[in-house]
Image (tube, rainbow, N blue to C red):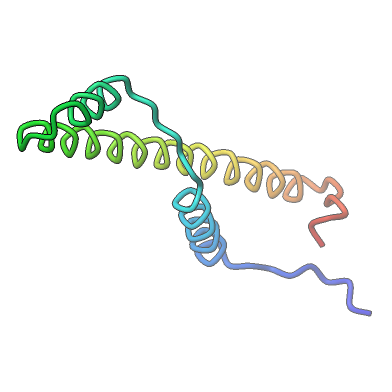
Length: 104
């Protein structure tokens, strides 16, 4: 059985991490509750005019923008944490410390 560790090129590792986190952050459901949307919806429900329809659409777009912003924040935070953990694990190996058993 070969005990040599698998060396991954840094740019391949970085690309894999970025792709995995983009996929994870993009598929993560984000729940946004804004009272402005609720108010616009209730106004539309009571009086379905074109002006109220436009207001509901505008508030819906604001909700979608807030959800995308939250997903980007989640992805960036995960990216920083995962790369930081990888760098710390790699730094430990560079100074001759034992490699954790899960990273063989």
